[in-house]
Image 1 (cartoon, rainbow, N blue to C red):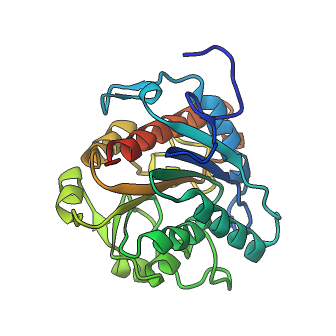
Image 2 (cartoon, helix red, strand yellow; image 1 turned 90 degrees about the vertical axis):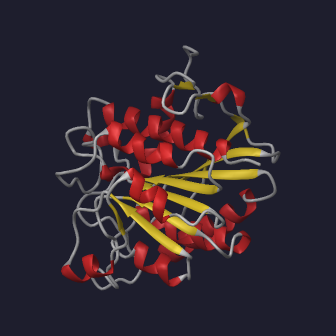
Length: 278
């Protein structure tokens, strides 16, 4: 592990357009309803990554063996939601290409909507593995159709091939009626369609607040790190074509543990993306 922090993810190089895994920050922070601050997530996660080892004992892989690039953060017109979503979608489309797999760092969870739209331009058949504390299946929230609380409803309307939702413990009666829950790693393995590419959307408030306090909307009763790793291990070697990690709000955790935990999840997701490269 190097001792000097660079403003990019550990073991990554600047993106030059070649094949590999590409990290892109999408610091959208517009519709948060309880508390904001997720726009600071990508920077804090990158800084925290330099506390980690490049080797994962969970997946038996090493970042130093991978082509990993960091494209930095998008400059978004904060406060301009339509303009931000359009810029995220178009920028994601420029990253996706032959031999290239993206990991997007939020930002609030609404970023998943333009990201999946962009991914489906290359992968019309796409199934979603969704880690979260919240259903995010409202049709509207506070009068808005586009919100962190409606994002999975909007994603489902794009016509994805399937949704597999893990860790959900908060939502309305109607949202739970529409939920596609997965209750165990074996259940995830059994529910996935093996011939359809996978996109992972990971809201870090899926973790219990005792581990992950640096989120915009903490929800008691969540998963612990080992439980999440059990789910991620199921995905090793599968055709994962992209992912996002969202809702880190580092200013609410002065211990920096939330950022380190998020950085470690990002490491495992990078390795899952690599393990599925044909």
